[in-house]
Length: 267
Image (cartoon, rainbow, N blue to C red):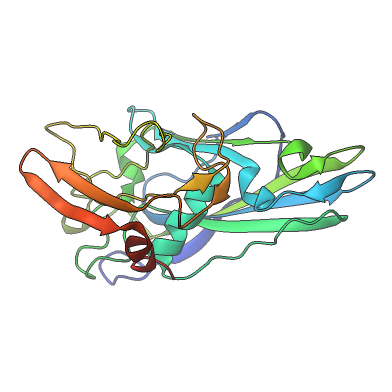
C-alpha cells in the first residue's frame, strides 16, 4: 500500500469525538504525520432531541457547519474558513457525485453529513492527481478547526430542542514516506473571496500573487442571503443572468449565461 504501487489505505484519525456547538473545536494531538494524505473523510453526526422545536430550515444540516480550517505549523492554510455548504459542493464536483447527508427535519433523530476534504485532485489525469497531495512529513504538526452552529441554524423556532454533535474522521493515505518522485509539486488552498450583493456590485476580485495560481473557482448564487456571510440563503439558478471572467490579457469567459455554466458542473 505504498506510493510506488499507487495503493492507499484508509485509517481512522478519530471516531465519535464530541464537538461543542456554537464555538470552534480544534484538534491536533495525535494527528498521523509522516505520510502522504490524499483526502480526509469527515462525518458529522447531529443528534437532535426536538422538544418544542419547530420549523426545519432547508439544508440546516450544512448550515450547522459554520467554518472549517486545516493548517500546518509552517503557516500553510489548506482549508481557510470554508463553510459546510461549500465543503459539500466542492466534494460533489471533485467526486463526481453527491456525498451522503440527511435532510434535517423537525423530529428527534440523528442527522448525518459526510464529505471529503480533498488534497489530491481526482479530476486530473492519473499521473497528475497527487501533485497537491498533503505530505505530512514536511510538518511538525497540523491543526484541524471546525465551528458548528446551534439549534437556531436548523430550526426556525428552537424551543426546548437540544442538539449534541459528534464527528468522525478518516485519512486516505499512502503507507510510508512518499518517494521523491511522488512528492507534491504544489500546495492547494481552499479559500473564499468576500461575497458580494450582485444588485449593488457586479465585480468580484481574485487575489493575485507571483506564487499563486487559481486552479478552479466555485461560484454559487443565493437569494435572501446574509450579506458578508458566504453560502447563506436559498440557492438559486436565476439570481445571476450571465458571468464573465476577465483579466488584463483578455476574457476567459465572455458573457456566459449563468444557467449554462451551472449545468456544465452539475452531477
